[in-house]
Length: 212
Image 1 (tube, rainbow, N blue to C red):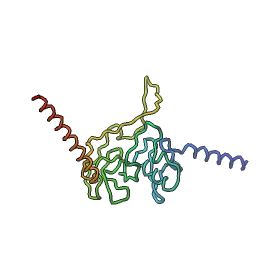
Image 2 (image 1 turned 90 degrees about the vertical axis):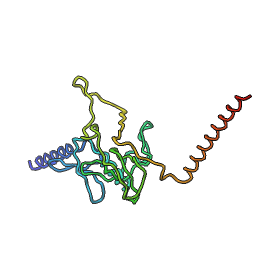
Image 3 (image 1 turned 60 degrees about the horizontal axis):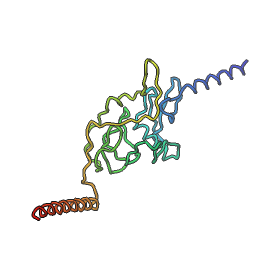
Image 4 (image 1 turned 45 degrees about the vertical axis):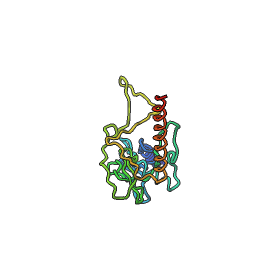
């Protein structure tokens, strides 16, 4: 009888453990009663998660950087999961997140070089130092509550594949030419002068041909 009770207890614990999981983050570690899930950001810090909502992108990027540094599996760091995917030219970095999971307006990736980002964490300004001034990030309603995206037709859930999500900024990007290298600026100037010279030659040819 004692053996049967022990087996029942072990089986019950296994069932409870299997039910304690995070459906929105496969890297989360979940345990306890009630079930609580966390995401490892560093060797000393774990971020508590609400697995009833979508995990903020900022949390995902921090976890991915931690896993990459520790030779753990990631998504497709440095590449694209599919050919049609969009990739940020600056690549993935270790972001600073607000308490609610949003990106902080200023990102520095642990260096003295900083830049402004939008609600998706994508750079939207020239790079500068830590004194750079950035507009506060305003999350659009589509991404504000991080709820799972579901479509229903006549009360039936519609499964979707190959979803493309576009992020729209309330404030336009503020890229300038002030941080371009001298060589690039020189090339632009030379090309502009060539174009202007060509237009002048064409205009002169047309003008003098009218007297012939």
